[in-house]
Amino acid sequence: MLVSDGADTANFPLVLAREASLDERYCECLVRGRSQRGMLVRLLAIFESRGIGVLSCSYESDNAAFAATLVLELKNNSDSETLTLVEKLMDTKVVSSVEFSPLKGRKFASFRFPIVILPGERGVVVQPQLLMNGLAEDAKQEQTITILEGGRSYGHSFAKLLHERKTGERDTDIMIQSLKVTGWGIGECKENEKGDITFIMKDPVFGLDSEHDSESRFLVGMIQGMIEEIFSRPMSLQGDRFDGKTNSLVIKLTKRDTSN
View 1: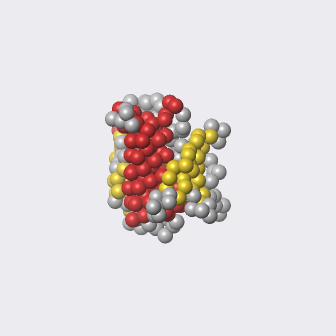
View 2: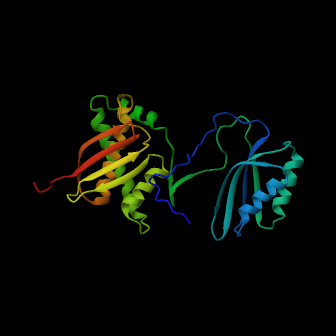
View 3: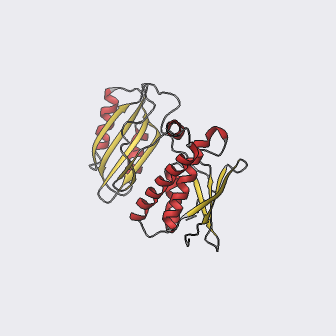
């Protein structure tokens, strides 16, 4: 098996909304049942045998049960077609339920809810520029400092939550994984012998420029807060810059002297 460290690998985006609505031939299908080895292959084979196209598929399973959501292209979109499909799926003696949701005129999926960031911890997806615009309206006089501290506070809280759900991996590795999976960017953390930190965020959700300054301030503050929580020490923001050539946000943090 070839293993990638994820540093330079190509990424496959998670797209929540379709650019264009589909017509009446398309539907979303939710299939639930008892876990069994090779079940996903069996499901796909049933759709293929009926001449039904599968545009996308998400399959999750544990030792007890599985759930699969699929976007299907039906041949004629008739009640008899869907009824026959349900019968074929139920004939496996493993499938317990099948649900359909028409996709005509819809841009978003119907069945994937809620969003769970960590076991037992729900999350939401927000449009960052709209969120930061709202924060900026509340902080016109001290906008940069307020948003930076808001991000720092969020970073502390999020890192603390990650630490409580520790899985044996290094805290910095968990931090980098969480930032990527929640859409902030692809991170890399470097510490020198003095305890100073350089954090590089490749392909960040927003960069450092005048148009998106409030958004980038929140992200810089969030990284600072997470680093402080993970390393259990206060840090000073030495500087940050956006490298347009590599599409990377570079944040430099120095160990703060707390002796005085």
